Length: 124
Image 1 (cartoon, rainbow, N blue to C red):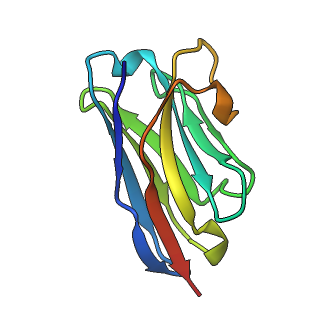
Image 2: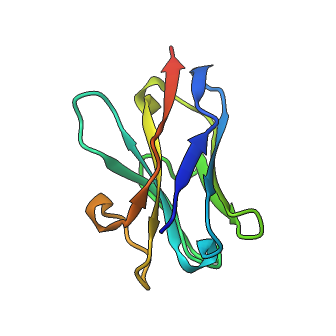
């Protein structure tokens, strides 16, 4: 079992940056692919970014490519999401998730474990 705790959310002006962190419990962090998802009010949870176990492969939603960067530090059991050039459309609750599948996936229902989420609000 993996427990995930997100941090780093907050209120930022358009054009600003935030760095989200997701700390995982347990000694098996490196055996999971990790993903970031977000959910805006009235909308379904949506894929943002994912990273393979080793960190070698990364994947992004088209809406965040070139602005967001996912990374991980397996020694610290932590995955990060660096968010730059934020816009009000990025306002949402951001969740990290862990997936035990071999291939990196982008569908929320396929992930095994979830954090509680952290709110990101971008003002115009």
